[in-house]
Length: 322
Image (cartoon, rainbow, N blue to C red; front, side, top):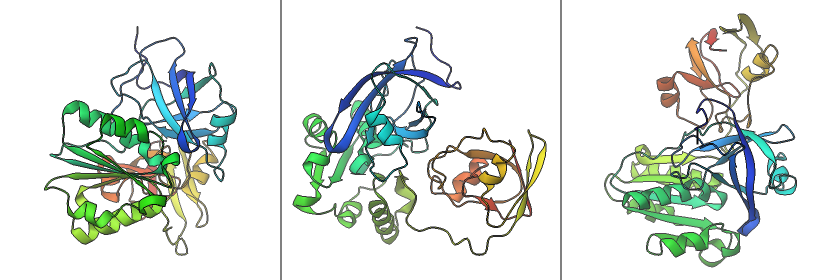
C-alpha cells in the first residue's frame, strides 16, 4: 500500500461510527484508496473539513501504530458552533471528508514517570498517551474525572486494560479530582499532562504554580481560556504579506486574521480564539504579541510563529509568510 503524503490534504472515508457513553460518538476514518495514513504520535489531532464546509479539530484517540485508520471521539456540544452536531447527525458510514495530516502541539516528552489528568472529553488525547506509555513499559497513571460513570467515554475500556493505573473520579460519587494531592505526590522528574474543561486546567495550573512545578505541566485546551486579554489599549499596526506582496493596516478594533482575509479569503482558521493552531503563521520580521493559549510566548518565539486570530504586534510592523 502506498503511503499518503504527510504534507497533503487527506481524503478519508467514514469506515465506522459507534455511539459511546456520554454523548460521544467514535469515528473510524480510513483513506478512500485504502492507502496507509501518515504516522502520528499521542497528543496529535487532525482538522476535518466537514461536508458543510465547517472545519473542526479532533484529537486522535486510537492506536498510533495503526496505519490504516484514524480514530476520533466527538462529543455532541449542544451550545457549540455546529461541527459536533453535523458529525453526530449527518455524517454517515461511507461519507468522504477531507482532513489535514496529523499535527501535534501536545506531544509526550521523555520523562521517568507520567501523570495523566483527564476531564470529560479531554480523555481522547490522554487515552492514546496511556496506550503508548503502556506499550513502552513506562511508569504512568491516569486520573479521569467526569460528571458520572455513564458520561465517561472509554472508562470501562481503560479500567479493564489497566486496572492498577487508571483511577475514575465520577463527580456525583467523589467530587472533582483532588489536584493538590495529585501534584504534590508526583515523583521527581514526572510530567503532568492535563486535558479537560477550563476550570480543571486553571486548577492544575494554580496547583503547579504553588508547588513550583509549572515547567512539568503540559496542557491541551478544547476551548478558550476563561481569562480573556484586555483589548482596550489595542492600537493599529501594519502587516506585510510577503508571498502575496501586499501591505495592510490592521485597525485597533480589528483582528489580524480579519485584515488578512480581506486579501487572502482562503486562509485557514477554526477556533478564532487562539487555542487550536489552525491559523499558526510564520513571522519573518517584527515583534508579535502572543495572546493564544496553544503555546507559550517562549515556544512561539522558538518556532518563529504566531496565531493570527488573536495575536497582534508589539512593533509598528509585522512581516508574515503569507
